[in-house]
Image (cartoon, rainbow, N blue to C red; front, side, top):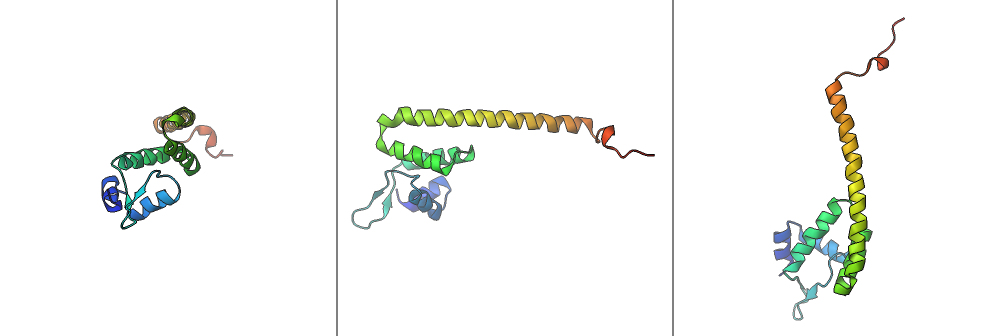
Length: 124
């Protein structure tokens, strides 16, 4: 698969795909021996989708790069990658709980309407 085909399939620009590769986020990209152009496997589209989900749920680029380096080393790194994902999942669960708490406060305020009486200016 060419970079243009991967861009079409993932919805990312060729520039963004090259950036991801330079950042060490896309492992195991082959080069065409005659032209030197990047050649992606069908699995790279799924990998890009996975990366986008990791980023969307708050994983740092640094951690994504570490995960990609491990993935490039093969199946023997699964325990380390699993630990990374489990740790990040814990952070996501905590963030969701915090957001739900904030949503509850907003819901309560929306039900209550105007500010509480003790915030109104006192006359006198």
